[in-house]
Image (tube, rainbow over the protein chains, first blue to last red):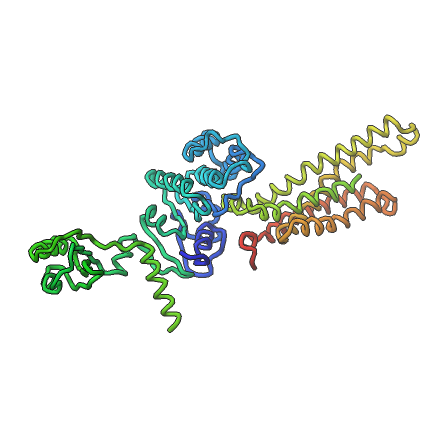
Length: 277
Length: 177
């Protein structure tokens, strides 16, 4: 999602930091109302885009401060576990001001894990990180997901969303769509398979005509053909048999896969067209 | 001596909320279950306790120096039990009142320096009263002291409630409204 789409506002609203202007929501099983703010915050944890650490305090002191605020039982044990989870046990006594941005993000993630939240909000957790540091954060998020933590992640890196998320919502100041990445692709794009041959087919229309589950085709280069299909599992073998029967040397038959970026650009393109009209 | 608790805590308290906001540590704190009343009380106590300690330490130093180096007649004129009781009693009450005004200013300011300057101004009425008492323009008496304690206790309680009501979480996070 692009800048200004409403990602952070959504996190802050669901995190009870901002009052919604309309609508309703339930967070961690509790209706989102001003009266329920404290109870909701007991069950969730938010990692803001900026870590917001006390730079003169050590890692452990920062975590101890927030363990007190969350009224965590056995805070020392919880802090140790959080530091182990983010691989920062060796830097526990270092001042946060001496840590790199990537390490501060990890401390902020450890802070978010202190209260064992039911829902964990991560607002652009890899913002400003180099690829290696971002990968470390991705692995941590994967581990949390495997442990059953519900994670609400905001990002404008669509490959990150595709990699980490079971369900994706696309915002463009309003909610444009929500669903599993595969569902979003199917909703917006027809399924296609791409067939590549060694040499151009003399009569591709005859080869592809009447094939089961094939709704149409068009050329995509001198020896490449895109077939619109209703079921790739049926169309691909049939197309392969047809090409071989026609004497073609088949280089590859593959299902064309649209990325989440394609989904996003398609939606935004439709928005812009609608705005123009 | 009562000017110290009327002025010193204002600078610390005025930085308390706006300073934390400026360094980016406020939002994580507001995401925790801490209630705004608890948060503000914590900020006030963080300014109050060192202020009281400094005020008492300075007064103790003053007493010690008077006892050690002043002529006996001067020492007996300067040191009274009633003054000691007043210092002990009024220091936290005056500091508390100054602190609540400064914290309230801090919740509404966008800049720590502005908040500190306004907080210092807010301490002036207290300084004026203590100065008038020191110059015997206002003559201290037991009844006046009792009334002053009651008023300051009430002001401290009201200060906490009013400051809590002024605390706008959304405005502090987004800077708007």
